[in-house]
Length: 167
Image (cartoon, rainbow, N blue to C red; front, side, top):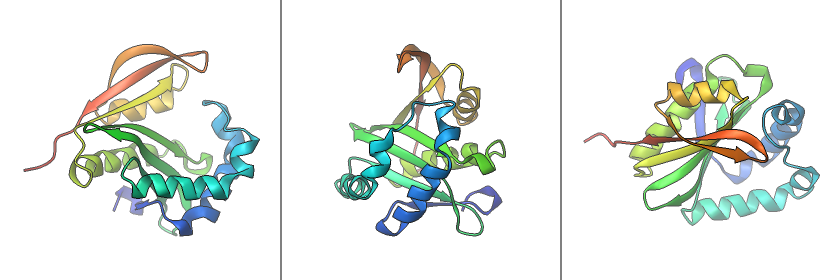
């Protein structure tokens, strides 16, 4: 259980409707700081959701939804491209709950799961320079900047965090 009664759940078939509603409701908000997913994402959501679940079943990715104390989906935290003990972290928290420490808590929990349940030894994440909230979440969770780069034509930075499973 996450602080503030938040829950992280592994993505499953039953999350599809709530996840689609979350993405639609927050689309404009997300595009202020990250590239838009495009109309095809929404039009092909059902097939995409099935494909994500298949990737997860194969062990290539670990997808999670973040639920509040009422069970409402308020975010997602994903580990993608799992390979050689590492994965890339991605996350989104809805506008309604932004700025309340939800992303920091959810990322912290997925880092714990990455080390313990998934046996990963390192995570990477990228964000644009103008997304200060994301940079803060990563830094509060022990990520350090390792490379400056371009993300969709915008200046960005890659972060890395080593993970250690408890003995």
